[in-house]
Image 1 (cartoon, rainbow, N blue to C red):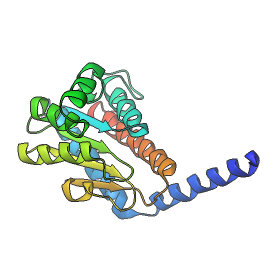
Image 2: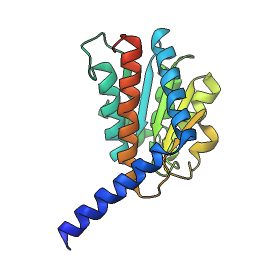
Image 3: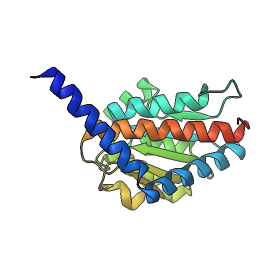
Image 4: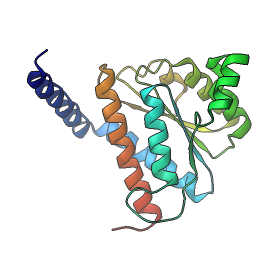
Amino acid sequence: MDGKRTLKERLEQHQTLMQKLLNDPRLQESVLAAAEWMIKAFRQGKKIYFCGNGGSAADAQHLAAEFSGKFYLDREVLPAEALHYNTSYLTAVANDYSFEIVYARLMEGLGKKGDLLIGLSTSGNSPNIVKAFEVCREKGIKTIGFTGESGGKLKAFSDLLIAIPSTDTPRVQEAHITIGHILCEIVEATLFKAD
């Protein structure tokens, strides 16, 4: 493998995808709508939950921590949580029932109307996230799907979809974390009046 060539190609692919996001007013409108929903939820004392699998689980946890910890500003805690943080729960439910219901079961027990669930799935077809979104629909909890280009099965269950225009998993994940960071900045600055 030619490492130098790979490095250049991947950086060019990343740059091309970021340019697509920059030139996509519809996607940008979805991101701004997501920010408004998040701001409203936090202002009403509601919670934002995140979920994903694998690398997307890591991104979900990362974004939850940006809200519950801090992004740029020293400020109050914003109640945000990744649903997979409790490994004892996750492994017990996956073992005793099914991995497909691990997130749905938590949203049944923890989720309240006015909360938000953000599901990250590059394919949009993760059964455990789809099932969680189904539960949220039944409970009146809004959902935001972060997916790749097609939206997959999550497209039908997302109240708001942020579909990254790519089918390349690493590039989609890079875009998810970029959009997630932008959301953190907008929400934090709006709620805590940063200039």
